Length: 120
Image 1: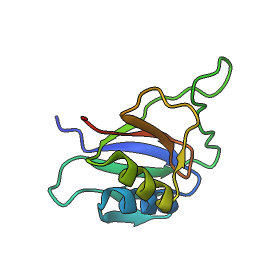
Image 2: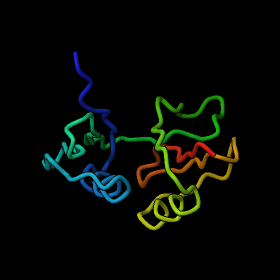
Image 3: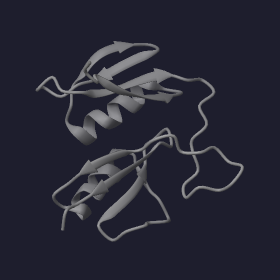
């Protein structure tokens, strides 16, 4: 078995794929109205984006009775400030609540949380 992709639902799969393409530097490989994929040049596991017209973003930090986070992406970076600036320039929003100094919780344009982190 081989994991090939993590799939994120979004009301606009192409727009979300473009965001992650900018953030990660991965090219778009499949581009259909309801399905878009990114994969790094080395062929390892990538990200896919599936049309979900009723997508409801999770709430962070969690609040009982609201949409729960099902997963989040962890992205290791060398420079947390520079990576956060690049993410926000690409369309991310930095979460108000930050659990650790060496992590920045952000939301992608569809509201999925992801963490930028460094090994400092």
